[in-house]
Image (cartoon, rainbow, N blue to C red; front, top):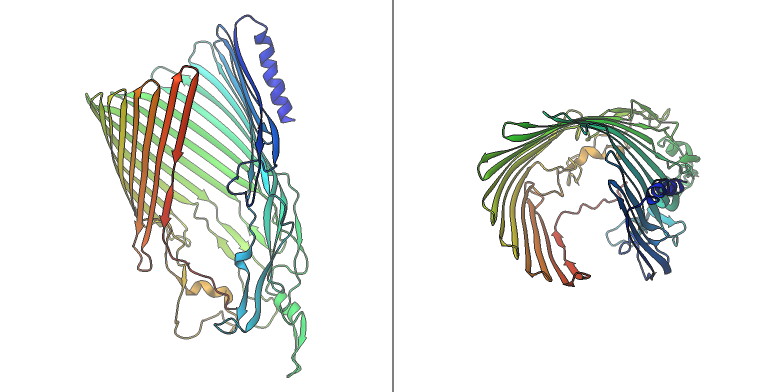
Length: 591
């Protein structure tokens, strides 16, 4: 339906204009493409439509101009899932419009789950298997998973008489349709994972309206944006095992003592649900409202830009599990201030100052769980908690850049910047986990003639306290004494594992050095050569357990040949290599 509306809108604008006299240029290309896939393709052909065979291919371009009126249409059809169409229109001096449709297909990989199969062993050799195990099952393992993403956009600008005030409006719709993998964890009796393809039907609508005013002393603009996300896919209800012992079933009598154990009741008291259907999918309906005000003006010898943005985001979702209650609003609010000021320091020197303050608050939620082992011996343990988000933060940025150009042939730049992020409630309420970054960069651009251009940038960044999963990597080895479980539950401690954990190990560097170099050679109008190198070296040895090293190297080479005005040959090659070390902490099943 939206494709039809787009086509009607385009032709509704085209026909009356094309009926008038003017200059028209057009081109049309018709062909075919063939695709063949072998072996495992979802990663190497992630954005390719996965069907083998021939597909018709179509490309067109139309330009029509009549004074101040202009039409430009273009399109490219590659296969049933990959295509681009668009149009730009100018109706006189005061109206500008454009519409577009884009579509592509993305294949998503299927996790085979083979690396998580495990079974307990009573000895180091693995010759005495125990009863604790984890198995998996792939439902429809041969099905290709992926989705089509379609984007429909339209923009309209209308300039009021006087050329000082412009009204604008925009709309964008994003549709995602296909199938994605979903993994269900069946607990207790089977310790079993099930993977199944489920429908993906996502829809995002965005509407923007704004006004721009050129008032002489300043340029002012205001913009409001409303965005809504929802999923039209039906909720899937999965069957969950009844609670029981993996080897003894639901009710078992000890042959030696004659004591009968009811695992259905005992283990069931430790679960929120079992022996029933439960909804395992569902996206919240998300609504976002933002306001943005921008002001630009000449101040002294320089140019000043100031901007303020306010946003509010809410999620509306019904909780799947009726046994758990959430107290609070799923809401995020934010305020963002940023500014930029550029001014000449001297005849050949320019200073650019930039700064930003951003405050985000994600409201805390109270999670009310059922009592653990309710009405059981040594039970009735309260596992309610408050969920705090590390999205709640204060973000400060600032930079100063000096540009010095004594001659047209070369230019020198120097940049000093900082960034400070303080997370209010990470890893716990009021912890104020803070990361500070300081960056220094030097650059030179040399262009003695039109035949040679060289650029070189050297950067150094220091990161104090990089983000890490606090106290989550290791468990205490060789601990003296027994664990201290909750009072009244002397034999149950597996939900207290956090008391053993330590180690703020990060996969982020604490020091980064960068080198960026590019060279462009054009000995004549028919030959152009481009070469470049990006080099990044990161390290982190702030923790005794970690000597982290990361290196990224990406050289590139490009060649363009232009034998005449009608023919171009070009080739590009880029090679990227990244090496990194780190620690691996293996999770072992030990009760």
